[in-house]
Image (cartoon, rainbow, N blue to C red; front, side, top):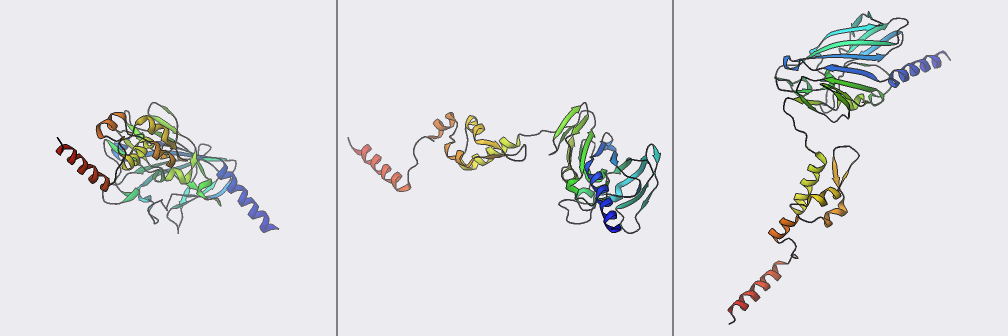
Length: 285
C-alpha cells in the first residue's frame, strides 16, 4: 500500500509538471557577440527536483548537447535564490531542492555560441549578420515520468533590430522585435531551430514545391490551374499536388502557342510517315 501511494504521488507530480507549459524567453539581441540570454519559468513542487539540459538532439545520433556553452545559471523561487548542484554522475543533470511554499521556479541562463570547429548544434552558428538559434542550447526541463512530447513550451524570442527570422514553429504574434510562438511540445521546439539574419526571404513553400513537381511533369504550368491543383498537407506551409489534377493541368496559353503544346502527341513512326507524305506533296506540281 505504501509503495502504491509513493508511485501515485510521483505520477501526480509528473502530470502536474507536464500539464503547465514551460515559459521560455530568449534574448538574441546580442547574437553578434555570440551570446544568448534565456529566462524560463516552470511549475515545481516542494522537495528534490532534477533539471536536465538537453543531451540527445534530433539528427545528431549521440549525447552531443553542447553543455560546455552553458553559463550564468541562476535559479530562484518566489524571488529567493535556490542553490543547485551538478549531478555527480550525469553532467547534463542539475539537482535542486525546491523550498516549501514554492509553486514554480524562475531560471536564468546564458549560452555562449562556440567558435568554428565543431559540428551540428555545437558548431559555429552566429555572425554579425546571420545566426541560427537551436532551442536546445538555451533551456532546461524537469525530470518527469512523461515523454518530452507531453511537455509544452511557450517560447518568445527577441531578435536584433531590423533582423528577420524563419522557423517551422507557428507565430502567435509579433510586437517590434519580439516574436511570440504558439505553444508546442518540447520535442517539436527543439526540432525547430530559428534562422536569423539581416536579409532573409521566405519563399512560398507550397507553391514552390508544386511548381517544381509540375515542371518535371509538364514543364511550364498555368498559375491559375496551379493554385487549384495545390492543397495544403497536414503540415502548414508545405503543399502537395492532387494526383488527379496532374492530367488536367495545361501549359500557360502563351507557352502553348509558342511550343505547339496543344497538338496531339504522335509516335516516331507516325512522324516519319507524315514527313514522307509532306515531302511527296512538295514534289508534286
